[in-house]
Length: 212
Image (cartoon, rainbow, N blue to C red; front, side):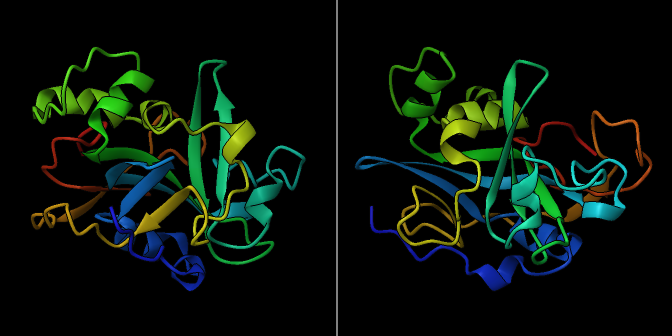
């Protein structure tokens, strides 16, 4: 599958809220040798860096979160609850520490590989929506399906053409997205700044983790 260039760094060098709206509908892809595993981004959460009480950057830079304080367009991957990984993409610029948590994907390529990674039985490229929703609906599932983990992917430059983890505008073989309205809702699983509507999702899309 010929790949388009990844989104450029200046796409991410903006307020996370602006990036969030435009990131919806874009394609997150993982290259696994000659195979491409990919999903359309349908839900994200914005974190406003050092000024956001719910953000990992709020308490300042540590060894764990240092990627957040670097250039935009890099993967910040962390392990949570002793169970699963979550992936953010850094926004703004050095020392601003804004980011977007990827919450849900609509699978578009590599269904079988995603199923195997999630330890789900998958005999063929089954495109049943109810079954596909089990692959990458939720930040932990998303990372598991694309085999994203902190050891191999934290700090990875998603704007680099030679990266095996990228975000692209579209894939030629994948149908264009139906028009969905972007809506906002409160973030999930936090106690600080929980009232802020910084979760962005495509209303009515069946692959979001939690409806608005």
